[in-house]
Length: 108
Image (tube, rainbow, N blue to C red):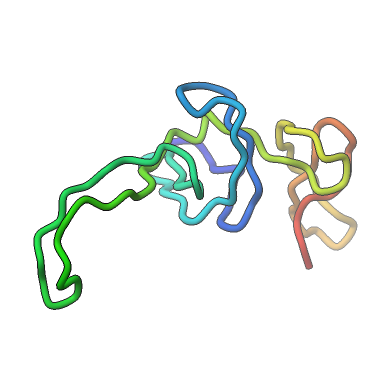
């Protein structure tokens, strides 16, 4: 299991697979499985039975997780899909860095 360089709320670009070229926001990430759930990417149909929570049965569309190796982070500074590096600030804090332009990606 490798360290995840992508977090919830990040904007990512799909580089591989049936949804190649799409962009979306990361809704959830699963570090144990090394997967991410991206808004509008890898949409599957699911047949649901009626229940108390969902009284209307039928076919719904929902996103399924994809491997994090199939997505690249979109840098907020340069706007390009890029790899992510790590760097230390003077105060010892570890931050994510855009490999293309060198800007810090982390907020706060």
